[in-house]
Length: 317
Length: 278
Image 1 (cartoon, each protein chain N blue to C red):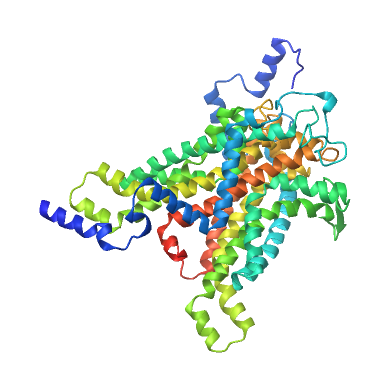
Image 2: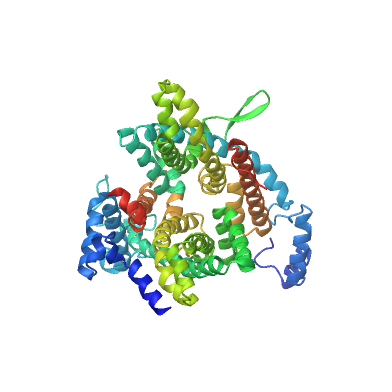
């Protein structure tokens, strides 16, 4: 038995097959980073997406350093100023001020915090719980799988926006509520993708081999299934993050996201809408921030999807 | 519902009138049994059965969503076919660009921008509201529907452009298309009989899903344009905390969306004879 194990191990050793090039030859961190950089450089759209995404994250983290003004500081004398290039604008407030004289640029920079926080934490909740539940459903099968999948499909068949608006209306406005709403309502999509991948992986030869040599279930899951799950799940996570940022702004626009005292892009749009005809810059720039974020994450996500799926990688070469 | 200075007895009387003094489980059970019989409770604000209010608003939403879907199919499918049949051309970049734009421009922001450009600056369309003219006894909306429908349709246009592009691209490389080409069939015949027909199959399921996106998206668009439909009703009910109305609207929309999914599956079966549900 032991002999057989060694024998098999030798046979599936990737180095000996000579099929996997690039990364497999040199596994040091530098080589890996260089490899990733090369993949990014080849696909400029992905590079641009990553840069935009990083800029938004940096803006969110270092908002107090970057923002020229206090985002909550009201100044009625300087209120309703247009951006600096328009008549009546000043360099003091680059993107102008809102109806209460708050600096729009500073509010957009601070608003990135809400978006990024909701995106990251919401995805973390959905990712972790969704993967565990999906693994159980896919690996265990049977009645438990039926229950899990029926529940997931029920949630997935609801119109998402209506569902989220409904829950948010009941729970009330707070940052924690928004994060929890997006985290929990996105579990089913992660469950579905995880389960699909697990079902596919279970049919693979190496999993069957691991099972037949009597490896323990946890070892199979952690060593063989999980690493193969991460690719599709990370891709899904990036797209879900941009979707959450959109929906958070949408809820804010409807007055259902974070309380109005917290500067967020959705809240700014909701306030700007009331002054649309007279002070359009109040609505234009927070919206541009949302568009830019979605643009960056989507481009980066497309790149990730291509790179994390080795089949696609080979095709692109 | 009562004045801010209402006495405790007044508040108690109102709670009794609305049935809020009963245990929560009893209230919930009553709600469920009534809902099953089509009674979704009364709107607090309008003092009318919630479902009646929902029914009144349906036509405006269906009208808006249908026009948006029509626009999206017209633009999205055309762009997708052009892009997919000329891969890596300018048309193809356009198709992919519009796909990305539809995904990254939020509907609610697009609505605001369209108002700023076309209503405020150019004055071509009204800023909000639904105005109609009468034709054969029907109330047909005039140009006031153009901006909201267009804003609502962009996401779907992008999706359709993407999917049509990849479907056409895939079918173009099928062997039967190569065979048709080598037989010397005319281009228009290859497109109509082989490529478009086979690309349409995946599109049908997407159009069904898109219509439910349009219904959801109408929450934003109807709020922005004060379009008297379901989305507007839901947003209004949420902000006035009119919960029976929120429930009735959400229930009805979900019901329609799930029904649409069923219809889509059935149509799918008709179009593609390989698919059979047992």
